Every structure is written in C-alpha cells, then in structure tokens.
Amino acid sequence: MEEELIVSGRMNHFIDPQLNIWHWEIPLYLFLGGMAAGILCIAAVYYIRGRENDYRTAVRITPFLAPVLLVIGLVALFADLRHKLYFWQLYTNIRLQSPMSWGAWTLMVITPVSFVWSALHIRDIFPRWNWKFKWLIMLEDFFNKFKKPLAWVMLIYGIILGIYTGILLSAFNARPLWNTSILGPLFLTSGLSAGAAATLILSKNKEERKQFARIDLVLIGIELFLITHMFMGFLASTQVQIEAVNMFLGGPFTMSFWIFVVILGMVIPAVLEMMELGKFHIPAIVPAILVIFGSLMLRFIIVNAGQVSRWLY
Amino acid sequence: MRYAMAVDTKKCVGCSDCVVACQTENNVPIGFCRDWVVEVMNGTYPQLEIEIRSERCNHCVNAPCVRCCPTGASHFAEGGIVLVEKNKCIGCGACIASCPYDARYPHPNGYVDKCTFCIHRIKTGMEPACAAVCPTKCIYFGDLDDPNSKVSSVLKKRKYKTLIQEAGTKPQLYFLI
Image (cartoon, rainbow over all chains, first blue to last red; front, side, top):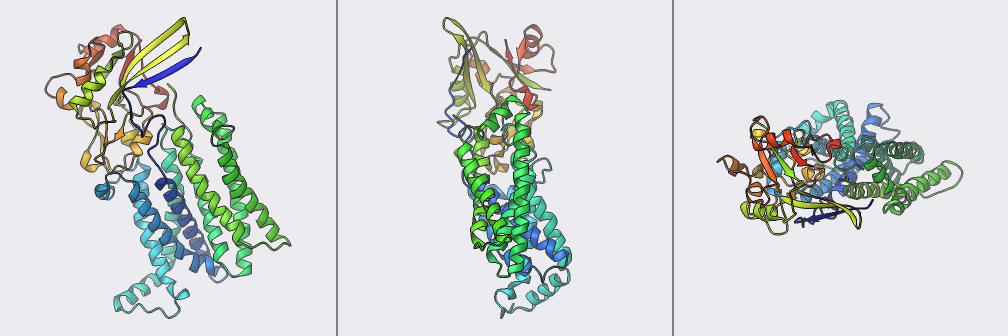
C-alpha cells in the first residue's frame, strides 16, 4: 500500500515541508548558556569546597567568560523574537509549565550573579583596579562577606540553567526527537564539559590543567553514556521516535552527528587527554577547542534534526 | 460550553473554499493560512482510496501551545477556544514548535496567529466562516455540551476519528469517516 499526502492551501514556509521556525539563534544561545552554566557551576563547587587556591583559574579567572557568553546569548535570544518590543512580557508573567518562562527568570538571576562574581575578582585581571565610588566599594565588601551564599546561588541556578537548555526542547512532544528527558542531563553535561575546556585553555598551572583534563574525560564518558542511553530509549519507543533516531543511524544527520559531535567533539579529545595524562605532551588547547566545538555542534544538530522529526498522520 | 468542529471526509471534495473564506474573513496575510486541505491517497491504481480533510487548529483540551507559552499569550477563551493575545505574544516560536498539527504561523507583524473558530462570528450567533461557506456542508460546528447542537448530533450518528491523539492533546476537531 502506498500512501501519498497532498497538502493544499498551506504555503507556510515556516512549517512546510518541515518545521523551520528556529534558526541559528536558539542553538547558539543553548550552547552559550550551557557553557556559562558549566563555568559557573565548576567555579562555585571549587569555591564552596575551599579549593580556591588549588584551582585559581577555574574559580577566579574563567568566570569572567560567563557574563560575556550570557550577554551574547541574550542578544541571540532577543534576535530570535519576532515581536521584539513585547519581550518584557516574559517578566510580567510566571508560567510554571513553560520551560521558556523558567529560563527567562533563571537568566534574570544568574546573569547579575555572574557579573558580581567577576567584579569580585577583577583585581586578578587588573591588579590596580579601583572602584572609585564609595558605594561600589561598600557593595564589594558586602558581597565579599556573603561570598559563600553567592556561590550556592550560582551553583543551583547554574544547574537549572544547564538542565533547562535541554528541557526547553524536551517539553515539545510534537517533535519526537526532542521529546526525551535525557536531553536535560545531556546538555548539562555537555555545558560542564565546555566549561571545563575553557579552564583548560586559560589555566597556566600544570596541576590544574591535569585536573581539568581528568574532569573533561569523566564528563565525556558520561556524555557518551547518555547518548547511547538516549538512542536505546528511542529505538525501544514508538514508531515516530524510531524514525526520529534513524536520522542519526543512516539518515540525513548521520555524518554530521557522528563525525562532528561524537568523533571530533568527544572521542578524539578523550584520547588526546588520556595521552596528555600519560607521558605524551599535547598542547591543552587542542582537545579543549575540540570539546567546545563538539558542544556547539551538538546544539545545532539537535535543534535542526528535531525540527525535521514529526508525527505522521 | 465546549466548542468543537466535525469535518465529513466523505462529503468534502477538497475545493479549498474554506481556506479562501478564512483568509478573507480574518484578513490572513498572503502566504499564510489558518486552515488547509489534506488529501491522503491510499493504494495503487486502480484500487485507490482517497480521504480529504479540511484541517485547522484542533483547539485541544490539553493544548501543548498553551502549556509552552512563556508569557500566557496563548490561552483558553470561552468554550475552550485556544487564542493568542497579540499584545502578550513575544514571537518566540515555542507554540509553533509545540503544535503537532502545525496549525500556527508567525504573522508578519511579529505575533503568532492561528484559527480562532471565528470567535467574533460565533459570538453573534453565526457559524465560523469555513463552515458557513462550505458548498457541500461538510463542516459541522457547535457546542459539545449541548446535545442538540449540529456537532453533537452528527457525532452521535457517525463514526469519527481525531488526529494524533497519541500526542495526548485531546483534540476537538473530529473527522467523520
């Protein structure tokens, strides 16, 4: 039996022949938000555990990237909106059922927190920095006194930010590829791994670099496990999800996903980091850049492939 | 009150009059539509079977678009009609991605637009434009809570199906088969 479906009277290029509503802005933001979340979580964990002096770069230097990444991400998010001047409606409503609403409020907390954290460590970059105004100095003293609670806020909201970037997609049961709760932990792990890679690039301390190579290795292992787990779940699920995952197992996204995300973004950096931890000397920047690139490609491929996957009727 | 619509796939000839009527009534911008016609052809020649459906928003009871909307612009109006409040919509596209029926489109003015069951017409006692204009009278509209409404009585007599009920949306657009 052959089935042919003809749709007439619908010429919506955002929907036909496949959903095409989100372009580069959303995946770019998901990557930047995830990486910022990873950086802030790592910094908060080491600060709370009192290892600030052992992992100085991770706690004091790398977090300077977070506000930059978040602001670029927010600009991308704003660029994606079609009714731009009404964006403030996000902040006059709290919608517990909408992951996007959760995300908007989370960003409202974590963006200022990331700025404050960077400001507290500004003398690590500009040793002779002077706040000039008395109230700014008082503010600095205030936050220095409550640095530990601040670190806890940063950790909790960092985790929410990292997970929400995945949940944002998995809440859409209309797109079978996104409709898996594994996307939350997968994007969080991928963000943490990109965050660890950022420290790997910036750190000048050999011990710290070794530690972050180890962290990255573990995170890559978790990511590979989650991806396998996700694919197994899809293959054991309904027809639409089997078709969705087949886009990665022989379908149009097979090459890009396995080459860019799995091999270049996970397997090769993992091998390089293992060699680095062994006797070989590998420039730390190579695996780190590959991890960040893989993390970016993961968002782009999942967002694009999800829009292709659909229910059949 | 629970508004619903039933489309008779045995009577629909796929003329697209409903599409044009909707575009005219609701001033739908060129290149977009709030309803459309789907023809499903089954079998190989000469054993062919065809089903023609006039489709639109299903005004779901468990609407994913209302759930996903971050501002509450997508909401349930009286009778369970799913509407978009223009001045609350930020045009993020979450509802478009969340709709398994692909029933929404971004209006060139920025907000998201969709079928309203012609709420402005039914408030005055008229039928939605698509139902009123249908030359084969295959679109039945009415209140499911009223046992004598057009849609209730036709659903009592005929076999029907809904689309993608596996998605858990509880759609309110019925197709008579």
